Image 1 (cartoon, helix red, strand yellow):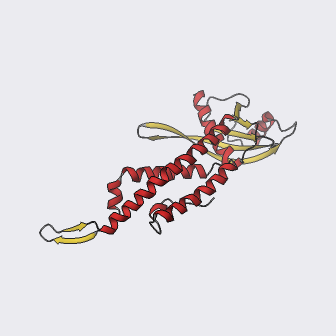
Image 2 (image 1 turned 180 degrees about the horizontal axis):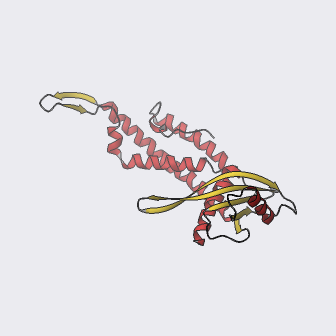
Image 3 (image 1 turned 90 degrees about the vertical axis):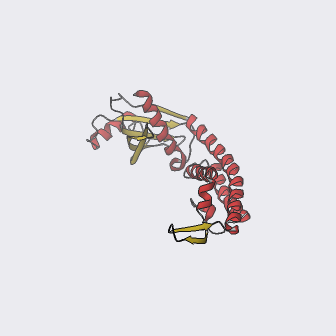
Length: 238
C-alpha cells in the first residue's frame, strides 16, 4: 500500500488535480488491501487522515494563520509587526478547501468498507476461556487459531488502564511467545500447563482462545481484531 504522509495536503504542490491524483493512488492501495482482507495499517491510517481533514475543515481560521503573511507595516509605538494576507495565500487556502471537500467523501466510503470487513471478521470469531479463570484477568495468554491453520499462536497479554477526559479506557499490550502445532498432545489445556511450567512468573494465568471458521490475514487483521475482542470480553467479566 502506498503511504500517504500525515501532512500530505500541504506538502509539495498544493494543487487540486495533483492532490486528487495523490489521494486516489493511495486509496487504490487501500482497496487492494481490503480486497485481501488486510485491515491494518490501512484502516487506522484512513481514520487518522479523515480526522485530520475534519479538524482542518472545522478550523479554517487556524488554516489561514498557518500560512506566511505579508509584512504590511511596523507600529513603532506599540512595537508590533502588522501583517496582511496576500492574494496568493487566499487562493491557496481556497485550493486546500477544494481538496478537503473532495477528499472527505472519498475517505468516508473507504472507512465504511473497512468497518464492514472489520465487523465481518469480528462476527466470525469465537472466544472461550481455557480452564479456570482467575480473579485477575488483566494478564495472561491469548491463543490464536483461525480457519484452516493447524497452529495455535500464543501471545502473552497485559491490559492497562489510562484516563482521558475524565473517562477510563483499557489498552492491551501483547508479545508473541510461541506457536504449537495441532496434535492430540497440544490441546489448549496442555499448552496452558506447558506455559505455566515454562513461565513461572504467571503461575495462575488467565487464558483465552480466540478462533474462527475462516482463515484471515493473521498480522494485518485477525490478531489486531482479536486483541480488541479480548479486551471487550474481559470487561464483561469484571
